[in-house]
Image (tube, rainbow, N blue to C red; front, top):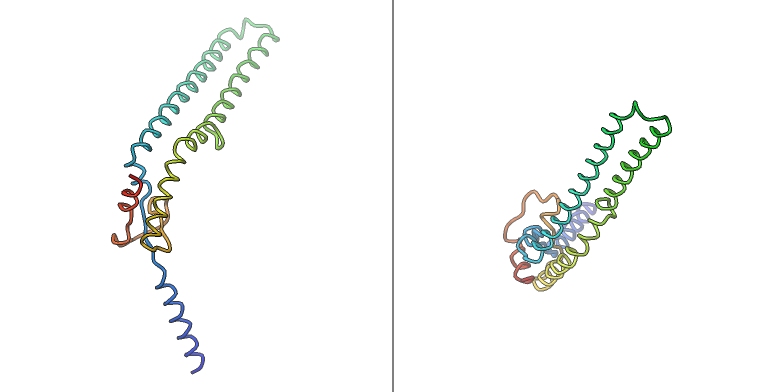
Length: 168
């Protein structure tokens, strides 16, 4: 009997603690897509990526052209000239891979550009989320767009529009 009373007390205590916490969710992707500053930053990033992709394509075309020329002239070249041309082509490939890594790698120029342009906008959105959460006394605000597995959420707990009004 005593065990049952203790279990019931623990159950009600944990239920009251859980009930005391309030939750909400936002869709930060939806918020960002509606901000002109984010759209402009994304356009700049897309233009930069397109430019770098063109440069990479051009480099690979030069490598391909050099390889085809080497294949055509290989028979006429001395052993020393052949090795030099092969080294030249290999170096061109290595430099192009290094260029790609420098631009698109995990710590590359693209990542730095995103941080430079988008991070201030995200910080502004997060500050607005915090203001709304504090004003409405939410203990937790979940991001529905970040891949968190929120399978169902009652729309009455969606504060996306409140955050959007706060940011604008």
